[in-house]
Image (cartoon, rainbow, N blue to C red; front, top):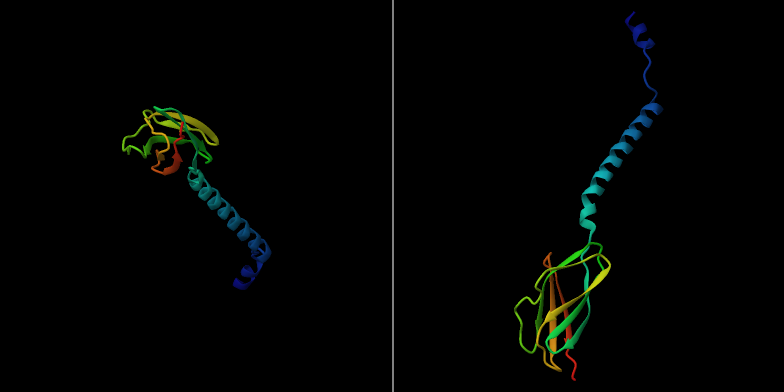
Length: 139
């Protein structure tokens, strides 16, 4: 009598069991992929700053044109000029924020000499440094 009871019970077919197993595996892997994607989204933003040009409008000013080619805004905290008279003082009074894919002109008070070569160093809030070398015009 015991054998008759066992034979009358029906189980899932192997095909249905395989389909359920595959569906659960796909659902779990999608959940993990979405979770991992949300973790890396904030870290995919890049900081890329280019010093496009340095202009000497008069003998007491230097204009630095900066372009942000990265995917997130960049805050410039410091700008230094080294050359004729070495400058270790930050010439930028207030930090400047440059939106992604935008550019800004920053005018600095600095007495320069004609024909001298100067190195511009720009430091961002993230601590990255960007350099540009330029020779001041002669008359």
